[in-house]
Image 1 (cartoon, rainbow, N blue to C red):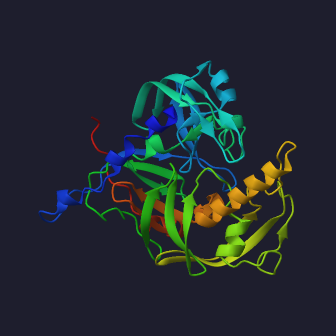
Image 2: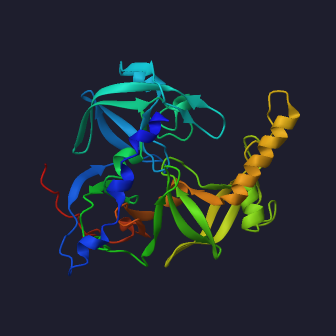
Image 3: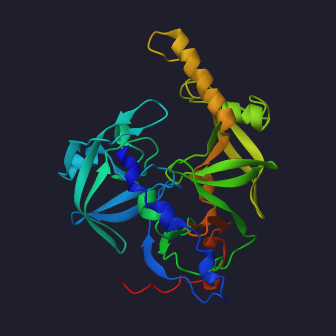
Length: 348
């Protein structure tokens, strides 16, 4: 798929260059590449200010998107050229697809400036703008093809987004004063998403860091078969307004990023994919798709951490080291005790 080429260079960018520091003590400090003030509403996904063809716009910060993308409505409003592109295909778990892309003559976010870039058109509007879970007014998703060439620092307490050059000392990233324990866990890009290993009630599980999702969730099969949740019990009562089946609200006793533990975390338990057996008239097809979805969930158990949980944290995503550093947010400290970001590096 053509969408793959947008991220194809990232593994080279993200390699942890341990050999560069093996000859002696490292003296390379963090160098700030860009400092951006985001906005958010009611604790939901954060909007990143950008410029498209000289106009001020916002995009939803998306660490679980395949690639940066724009909604069709926004592309048309900005008079962008939209065309069917060979090899472009976006697909979601609900069967929706998009094969179109828009050409953006001039784009900038912070100090990053690009010309004549091509973005896929989001599926059904996407999670930016009018789509599922998008931040209000967002034209699309700002995703990993623009994030992962840097080490990315996100303080959700102050809605600050900072890009750092990756050429710095390993482990030398915690420039702010942490209000408590620091969690350090392996960071991966799994299927073009940011994932990390966490402990849920003492059990290890993969967490998808999804900054474009307002809520945190997991599938029913993972909840019951992997984590031992009793759906409908005192810890996981039924939730109204479920889509495609019954939802539940499960209160996790502890969610831990290594040393950093958060208690009483609420997760939405969603029905398994295709649980409604919507098969356009062929019951056998529906049953098979449901079985396949359940088996996949069991083989790849995970939870989605959205902004209702992530808003509690300050995250440093070191794609160079393949580590995620997590602390409480800086706004839990007196203003005088919070550290300033390192100085910006000179423009190339």
